[in-house]
Amino acid sequence: MIIDSNEELDLQNQNPKRKQPLLVLIGPTAVGKTRMSLDIAKMWDAEIISGDSMQVYRGMDIGTAKIPIDEREGIPHHLIDIMEPDIPYSAADFQAGATSAIEQIAARGHLPFIVGGTGLYVESVCYQFQFADIGSDEAFRQEQERYAAENGAEMLHARLAAIDPPAAERLHPNDLRRVIRALEVFHMTGQTFSEQQAGQSKVSPYELCIIGLTMDRAELYRRIEQRVDLMMEQGLVEEVRLLLEREMPPAAVAMQGLGYKEIAEYLQGNCTLEAAVERLKRDTRRFAKRQLSWFRHMNDIHWIDMGENFHNNLQTVHAIIAGKFQVNLEYTSNQSF
Image (cartoon, rainbow, N blue to C red):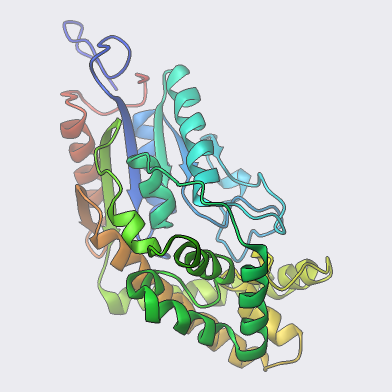
């Protein structure tokens, strides 16, 4: 940013009473977060923290729409490719990693910028949710896994819907690990996962600026179908095949992720490729609806309709950020936070 010689940019440690600024960009899959995030990051000297629950895993690139390193335009990206796909990674793990990244980015004088569509992950950082250490019941988990294996993920998901409809609405049936965890929370505490989340504080330790991207539902679905077709062209089948060859257990994250579950069914001979692709498009549309449902319950989101002119939208976003962080400056990337 070009700073007037008589004006100081006081966004961080110069004023100890001021909270650390945190920029957040959310929206459903395929809405255009990646393109928008790069332009915003360049303009505001930001470093991006991925807010996607699956992009933390190595070897899961195509199905997660992970931005290739050579397309990141030199902008640092954090919490990408940090885990093996057979290792569980929770919202609490993400919260710890993202909080640490925010501190490190701010210490470098840059703006921390979370970009992603995993609502719980993003919200847990924005408001520093308290995750109760209720432990686990391995026998209960194994019982649920057996039930899903014998009756199907949809039937296990129906169990969750019976006791915790809001959580079931937000979780895909294929997200076996999180469905089981939500059941386990109720099993061990008598309180639903949704009730626990509703009791969380919505007071942020940060100076938050949350931008939400949306668009006409029909256009979003068209973009989702285009994205799935592109993933197939890029080699999603081979990516899933390589994961299967690692002989990971059925409950492993790689076998539950959107795109991986559906293509694995094809590779295991349970359906045709055409049927797997159609199921993936359907599941992705449903996932986008769940994302939007989660975001509707979040506070203080500035919504941008991506069906409008991209340049105008970008200028609107810059104005929102400047207003939120009280920066009355011409836009450029020369000034760090």
